[in-house]
Image (cartoon, rainbow, N blue to C red):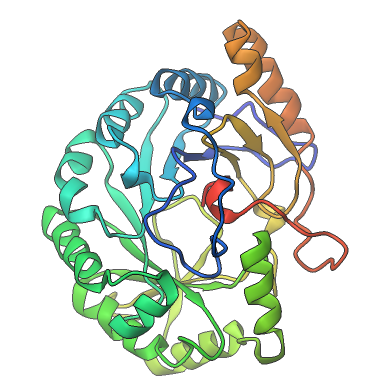
Length: 332
């Protein structure tokens, strides 16, 4: 089905990133600021019934890919049942999930049975000490156990998301590549994005020693004889693969080389706010009119009108524009 959601720059919107919570059991220092207290009230969260209604409307408009995100989506009670319900919505052909992995060993089997087949797992370091420094918790064993369980159950592909942090984990790229090769997973290298107070602070703190993701790409190309590859998924990464297929790596360089001209996605936050761009504040609240009695046709028209206002590109490189909402409040 061809999407009827087309913005003013002729981009088809086929991908919805759906946040089911703004809470997380970790405190990665580039995501949620220390002492952050401004989480949404659970009364403001979309109920599962409301989520399913909105996803059905998006699917009717041609959206076929759904990614469950947070916060940490596996902290939302009943997430596996929600996944099963979403997978059964006509038109949804791809259901995936992003997670930090701490709860994955507990939920992996039910999620797979529900229809989630692809996973993105955030893993910025293999070093347990560094992991505790970054996340504020001693969670290495739980995360590695979750990865092992997911691999055993059969999720494919499993993508490891590594945010490159200058002076912290940039010396681990080769080790992470070896880890992914050993476990049959895809590595994705992601530039640190200045989203929210903590993201902006981390970005500014490392600005003078910014990682050249393109130099890392060139080094990996030479080391593994990488060539262009097509990897399942609807996101912004571009992929390279070794000739024997054992190693695949994706690059998300939103800051140094934006990919806005091919953007095919929007984000629905847990409070029902539709964010039209990760790097701008353009948004539409769908929860309020829905709870005031808006019909499906009303909501459908609101979504169509919102997509028509989707901005051309993000503002990460414009100092006068700052994204004040935290990443966990937007949906990954």
